[in-house]
Length: 199
Length: 199
DNA sequence: TGTACATCAGTGAACGCGCGTTCACTGATGTAC
DNA sequence: TGTACATCAGTGAACGCGCGTTCACTGATGTAC
Image (cartoon, rainbow over all chains, first blue to last red; front, side, top):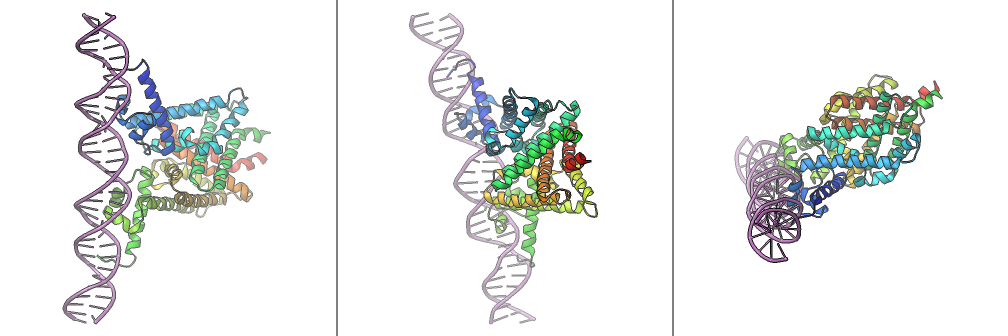
């Protein structure tokens, strides 16, 4: 059957979107092409009309998920002061809600380990997208020099990613919440470390 | 063939050890039972003399890898002052050597995401072992109250895990080293945050 | 001491299954005349 | 306006493959007599 113009592109977008949800939930090896296509409301054979291989789709879905997270951060910070913005992102990232919904959350805690074992192309895409996230945080640290801000932002992201990663892996809610708390404290201390020392 | 007493136990240990290396290198889904048994110098059929299922072995191999890391930390800190011990662990964890050798390194960056998707038993074991690692770091913060020390130690581990995780996922060595640097700065700031403010 | 048997860690063929990928086909719609 | 044909996104059977797991078997050594 022939479709209206733009139909194919919209189908492709839907596959990437559903893949980004499925992969964040089940990991890079946990989502098969047939089950993914079912999520997108199609049969598995059509997959190769849109992508060269499963690996190509995975790389694209991870990039999509990071973009979605960056977009979410921008939404979160709308109409806020610089200081409020930083707090809003940290609070959202280290919330129980984020921990309990990996499917719609940041792909770094769920998929970065798989990216580390992937081909160069995937890792290059990942690095570029990670750079964007660091930049968003760095811009919320206007009291620091650009290099300092970048470094603090990198540390804050690493802390948030590690905290969510570990908070999802433990069995007890109390321990898990404690990990999120510790991450929050660490991020706060990083942002304020100069301010609180000179005051 | 019948073997000397303790032979079976030593074979089992060898399987767990090799599994811990293979899993840290390839991820929880990346190592098949046949290829694992080949690493241990055996054929795949014998696997079920030692373990109920592949999942049971994975849980045990992760616990083994964390124990090995904790033991490594103890070796690192021998004959050092408390302050030197903290620095030694952070420097080792955030070294290029550790980043480039996931196979022999801490399993948290490579396997925690998989643990988060595992059964309760695996997550319980993981939580208990993580607790031990937190305790080792907390004991290196004698200037803090026990609760503060625990929280800082948790934050430091999350930061180190996140930093190594991200440093392995990017394609450029410069960016990767920058992530390790940022992790080091964050960990240092956490340890010294009270000290440097009151001085 | 010699012989028959029990033990059991490890072997390797076989199982059903789901995977990633290929490919001949479908059929609604656009285009040519 | 009507008819024949081209297009191409999507279908679903089929492929070879490696997976986790099972199981009848092996054979060196310990034990019973």
